[in-house]
Length: 129
Image (spheres, rainbow, N blue to C red):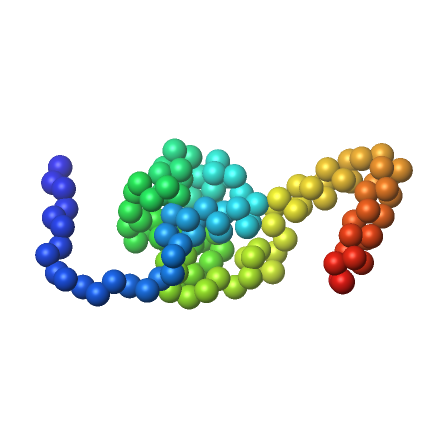
């Protein structure tokens, strides 16, 4: 197998911010409440590769850019850092992390639910919401 040659072109650096593509993938994954295993299932690749992409050990090729963008529900421009992402939770959908927590609250006894919801309401009033 041939290794790709490094380009000898002297191109000006792209201004894509301080976040690497791997860091952006990890951030978007966490914002949507996915584990690496869940993202691996959505992209169809092993979880170990998700780790390698997030740590910038692997470069994305075009097919993987599309797979990650579709799985994370962002545009390829947003994934690559060419355009800011639209909000935290992707297209107005609640994050899976939040939904899991709500489910755990629903599983609590009614008295504990009331206590917890009062605490949340108190916090939100104090936060000016």
